[in-house]
Length: 210
Figure 1 (cartoon, rainbow, N blue to C red):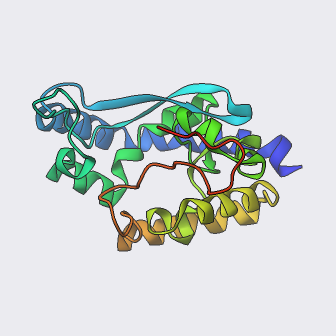
Figure 2 (cartoon, rainbow, N blue to C red):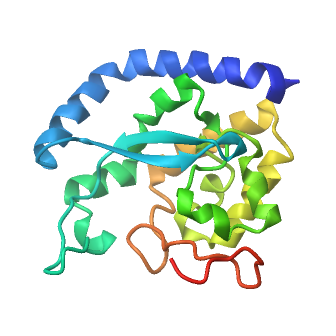
């Protein structure tokens, strides 16, 4: 009953209230971001949502667009600015996603919305993460975030899909606040952000190349 009837109502109400309360901070970060990034402070990108329907995610930019001599973007760790690191370590870069939640693209709690190009790389079980709206935070985020493997993330995502409850969402939100305060799991062990998901070994639907 909660997942089908009340979750969306609660998400819309809380996101609306959060936008109102945090509007001064959002305005300040927008201005600072415009200066720090030398232009548009927002990052938008297409992501798959519930039922793999594509929507446009909005976040605060954390990386510049510097390229090498061949015109290719530099690796994430070289484009991630000091200001961007601060935003990521405090999760402030995620605040504009409140707009996506209010619109109904996302939920407060659910599997994180990943890249569209990952869709052909999921196996049948991993595709199930799209049976619910993607979230601002989720079960995988409070159990390691970028410090755990993709496969473990997807296991947590599917576990959440099978167990959507009000109590569970509340526990994830409270644990998320704790994780943000201690800045836990921001990066993977080998990357400044997270390595690209290339598919689980043995998946029938894995792409051969990026």
